Amino acid sequence: MATIKVYNLKGESTKEITLDDKVFAVKADPKLVQFVVRAQRANAHIPYADTKTRSEVRGGGRKPWKQKGTGSARQGSIRAPQWRKGGIVFGPTSERNMTLKVNKKTRRKALSMVLSDKLADSRIVVVDSLDQLTGKTKDLSITLKKLPVKGRSFLIASAKKNDLLTRCAKNMPQASTMLADSLNVIDLLKYHTLVIDTAGVESILAQYSK
Image (cartoon, rainbow, N blue to C red; front, side, top):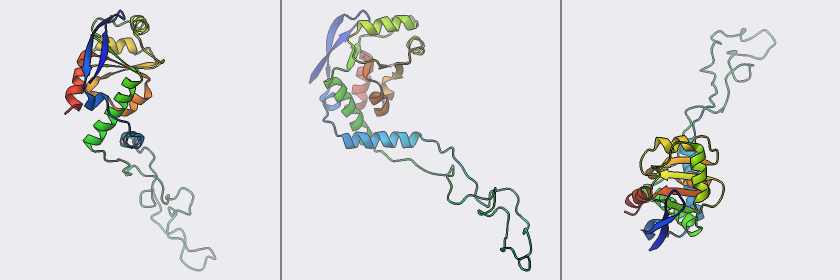
């Protein structure tokens, strides 16, 4: 099993913890990860675009002119699709269902693949605790500089809700916070480095190593 160093907020290595190979040593399958990303985006999509059909457009209850004798083409309603401000044919509606089903095992496997890739590339930094943060953005910025982090974007995960941590990262466009048990493939791919506390690692292992 792989091991990883644990740091305090001063950037000092304090100990090492063991990681389960079922979660942090999974061979990557790009097609599976791509499918989970596509499904997650599709399931989060809200179909705002909504056009009205001729039955939904207001008005048009009276025949615009008589059937014969006018020399014009016969018309039954001014809300027919060929009329200006008439109904739309085959337009987008809010009833569209764009969701994709993803099995729980598939989603967990994809997440494990991304975590394994980050660990292999030294893009996971474990800290003993995030409770000592004061809530100031400057303190979080200094802490990140002390830690052996790579890249310029950070996803900071903790086992429990931490209002001070959320407040720290609120003014940092390159950082985002999340609960460890809510990690997902898109956010892990979006941010270069994952910074997580030991309790968060234990939460992930308990959730995904089953």
